[in-house]
Length: 480
Image 1 (tube, rainbow, N blue to C red):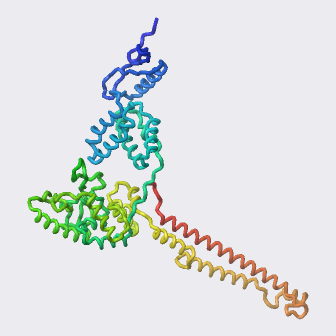
Image 2: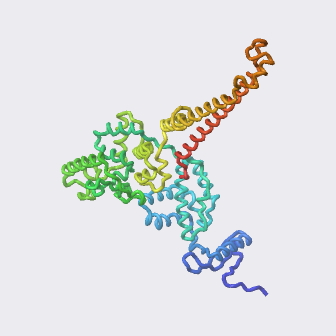
Image 3: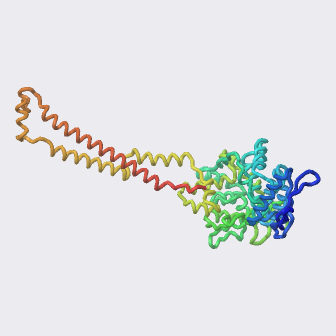
């Protein structure tokens, strides 16, 4: 008599089309009990899948409510997770990557059967067709975010995007200006209508969207404070004033004298422009008014700011950098002035100190100055180590003189008969005073050895002091 199966044990049978099917009841992610069906080409294949699912069920891992296609799931993720919980620009960029890359390459696969091998082959194919390493990192980043949300929703058991390998990618170091180059730019840009904007960026290292998003209510002339609260971005083909991306981007800066004078001048220019525009003025007309606007009160396009910046660089033969390069220039200037890294991080509005390290650059002049200090300590008679060296040298010479004085033979001692027997020290017979000369010569050799030993120990002490000094002064990379 055949054994009767218990409830939920599952069954395996062959379908009319020749395939094998297994089915059993399980609790889905939504909490509803549902019947799960498994298909395969052979009975062993289906049995293996059934055993795996039942083992996960015993571990408390529910099955998915439905069988998702990857393309269908990505659309669902964009609407439910990105559009409602992320900034509009984040949704715009993610949607573009999903539409152009992920859905054409991975959309046909079942979400639960998406494997490391499939994703790796997809990314390798993109790289082989000319997709840059930077783009591959962005594509993998979006896919990983989507699959991580599926894991949290218990639709998947692991994030396979995190297990794939990408080609090595090192972003090119951004071009920046030295303090002298930045000073020249500000001097030649005084006649430009956007001079006040460029000055604020150079002083505070603001992002383009942040400086264009400053409102008059963010400028406190009484307390001399500048508040960074909003940014201007192009979203859905329109310029919008939106909140900053992260909490660390919200920051308060001191209103420096140069910035205060530039903003007062900008306010006078804007008042004149508003009076000239009259009813055609498109600004808010209140404290929410943007500081930097067009002649009609609208927000300024980022590309128009960049065009003005590049025009000034071209006209005055300045090194070509991007507007964002001014942010790098500001961070590097702070580093050269020995500003604490934590202070620079707060000024730039970075959430991670390692990000601040990307914006601080080391020039050949910085390296030369640092190594010249090492050279000076090693080979120049100056500083505490050199004084210590001279002191040890004098002590060694004094010690050698005392030793020589104590062991030098004196006149009329019991040793004098030796010289008389061998010809005398007066050289009356043989002129041979090798006995006494040998004794003093041996003493001098010993003294010379002592002096050389003292010199070697002194040299070792100096090198050790320099090494300790460099180890204390050099910051340890906690590793961004």
